[in-house]
Image 1 (spheres, helix red, strand yellow):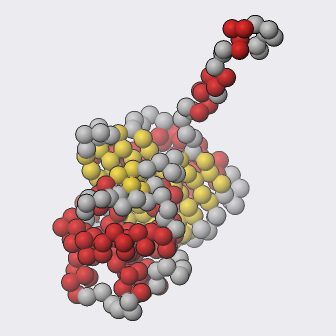
Image 2: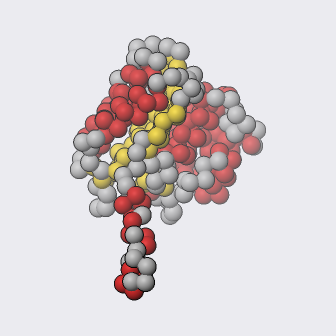
Image 3: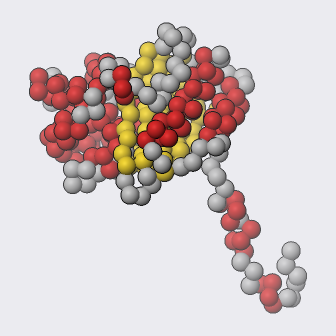
Amino acid sequence: MLAAGVGAGVLLPVAAAAAPAAAATPTVSCTSAKAGLAAKLKKDITTALATRKGTVAVGVYDRTTKTTCTLRPSTAFDSASVVKVTVLATLLWDAKKHNRYLTDREATLAKAMITKSDNAATSTLWKQLGLTKIRGFLTAAGMTQTKPGANGYWGLTQITVTDEQKLLKLVTASNTVLSDNARAYIRKLMGQVVSSQRWGTPYGVPSGVSVAVKNGWLQRATHGWRVHSVGAFKGNGHDYMITVLTHGNSTMNYGITTIQGVAKVVHRDLAAS
């Protein structure tokens, strides 16, 4: 309380009281049509991240139970190789606009880019498409928070959980942006990722559930290791997707462990619902 008429009181910074709230650590937010599921996911994801260092953003969406969870949904991260799904989606979107199939060369590059995370193949396709087409796809997809990397640096594209989840939704259900054939093709390649790169969001997936995944990892001077994983899962009465983006990891493995801690509880809680 400010004492009336006390001159010094007027000088108290009014914003000071609000500052702690503004600086508060973001919390996991969940909603669900299934009774009790939102509270359980919120608690379990929060617990999984309680002792983890670095900055972590999470997105979960299950069509079956109309469940959504988010943590830092609009925080931007360097994409690393996760952007390769966007590159493939742009390629297919553009081919559809021109009423053509992918060439054998494009198909070979696309397969290497997704299944082996081949950087040279990605650079070739990124250059072929150009920023105008990439931005055109992002606009069509409603991915307004994604900013393509400049000067060919596709791995420095800025991505958010919100936009990655939008992309996964497009890949997993009929829409006007990607044809059904294009969506099936993307899921097929994401389902053929080499075993050494199948870490992250698929961790703890129940048997009988299909997996489509793409991961990204990149070390830079600031924010240490960026380690990301996006995955789409279907089966056992569920149709869901998980995005976990991280940076500030001391090692790549530290980031992987963080992601897998989240994935494990999400798969478990949805399977039990």
